[in-house]
Length: 313
Image (cartoon, rainbow, N blue to C red; front, side):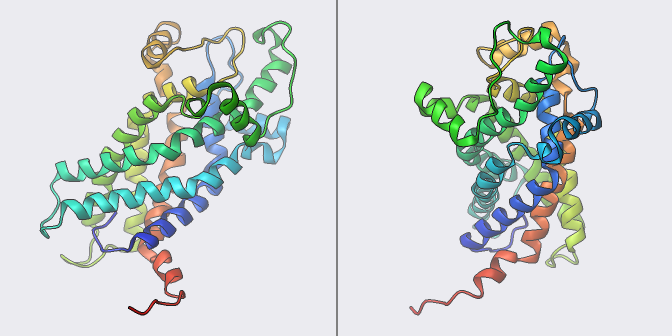
């Protein structure tokens, strides 16, 4: 974020609104990313993002592309709010002397933001991935029955609340935080790359030394920084997605942890498997953060708060 003073409530509102708009726009691409990343050798249903979306619409209808969206829309507000507000907090903390932040301090601020957000990100993505991948398993059952374990009874797709109750009952709170380590390995480097890159790209378009950059510069900077960071950490995103997927076909590997997942993917699918869904992820993240920066630039949160009555001291 740009280094302007914004109140914490305004940061939270800006981050939340940006997340809601962004998720609504790009969720179908995110669903394709999850399904492509979960495909293993011997059980490939989809050849590309467009093939995945076309087959999803044919088998599940238009709203099938939004399977799991309710979880994201519910939790993306606190997730994005925490991420963006934490980065601003750390940047302002590190620049108390009024001097321009060094690259190291920008990276440390991003690291702090990425670390804070996983409190919400991990359970959100744990539930979202189960719901998104349910359609892939159902399609495998119809088109590739040999990949489904014999005697498996077809069950209705669970809701987010059913999944939450089941995980809490069987594994406790740890069930919702499966893949926490992989999420940290993804989100901390992402934020370390994204926030300094955005700040420096945005500074290139500023009007004069002190003036803000135009909104289109903030949007483009957010898109470029987001897509760059997304592709850079995609290998860890593949690992995280595999670890958090609970349902598998009979020919698909199960993983005990990050190192086990890496070794099995390298052995069975080769290094290129770590790039699965990379372009989908770039297409998801770029507008998400571009929209977020524009919402911040426009000061939507500050505008909403201006209508609230001010307390007398």
